[in-house]
Length: 432
Ligand SMILES: Cc1cc2nc3c(=O)[nH]c(=O)nc-3n(C[C@H](O)[C@H](O)[C@H](O)COP(=O)(O)OP(=O)(O)OC[C@H]3O[C@@H](n4cnc5c(N)ncnc54)[C@H](O)[C@@H]3O)c2cc1C
Image (cartoon, rainbow, N blue to C red):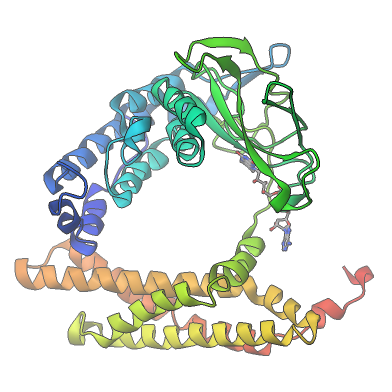
């Protein structure tokens, strides 16, 4: 038995009681897939996750992958390969994918529920079983020839990678220097060095389909000049999938990490990218449609508050959520004001950058508070109709705790954002 204990009850609660997916399933949108089948699938997948999939977790961490520099080859621990194959053979990694890449129709939330089980039990195995997901991307974006490659890759369980990062092009993806040169036969020759590539090489599959960002010769600068190239580790027959000659892509190093050892990565970094995600959230995710998508979500919270979920039993919590919503809407108005002011005075943009992470986290808290209260409402209805259980009582208590202990902090964040000054930006470089 492995280290992992799943929580199928909670998955079922969210799928059937909170999101009511049986209504979608009953409409026939996913063929014969019905609620009892989804419940059975979750049970089966959880058994596999807790058993054969999880059981090699400690061994794979204590006996990490090895790298043969002469052969440019990574070898994974045998126990880990056994675990990963068990999941592949059961077909759980293809649930919810397109039929053309071997998938079976299912709502995204069902796919993600099953992914939660593998990500909890053996996260590195998720990396090596995600080849069909990459193939699906190629199938959606590619031409007829590339769609055929995608079908072959998924059918033969080839691994897949996403190859973006370079030594001087991490967050700044547009700085990518890997170059693609068109060849006389219509193919492309790539030149460059990438790093930190998850699953960049391994012996778990006969081939790897790398999806590589590179700049075609003569293309413009930045992200707009980049293209995505398909680079197989081994060439292959496009009709049968039979492997041919080794292609010119090689692993030149394997990074030792502090955890998740079985996921073969070239280097290790301790830095995160929250600041970038926070700026992306305000400038692109909210800004791209002038806040329409964001307003759609806040409208749903407002509708929830206008209803009577939980009645008197969630009165205090609903009041706290209403204040939190008001706080976040005020933050958006303040940030939008800074952005408008930047048209006259560009330095005003720094105000947004200085508070963007706080804003991102505040929106996250608002959404979590809302979703927990929705769950608490469902739980209270169940208690009223079928009697109290510790599971439902736990849902109400968690929502109440979050509302009282986390949501009030948003008022302080609102004040911080309103009052942000440019002091740090005025400092001399030597002060850092
Ligand atoms: C375990 C692991 C697996 C990975 N797997 C893959 C993979 O499969 N494929 C792949 O392509 N890459 C992969 N990566 C690389 C990952 O995508 C990069 O580490 C990431 O994009 C950050 O780039 P960087 O490490 O060069 O850091 P940098 O870009 O140098 O960033 C360093 C720090 O500066 C901050 N920063 C940078 N620019 C700004 C800005 N404009 N404003 C504010 N703050 C900023 C960042 O938030 C970060 O904290 C992996 C990394 C790790 C650690």
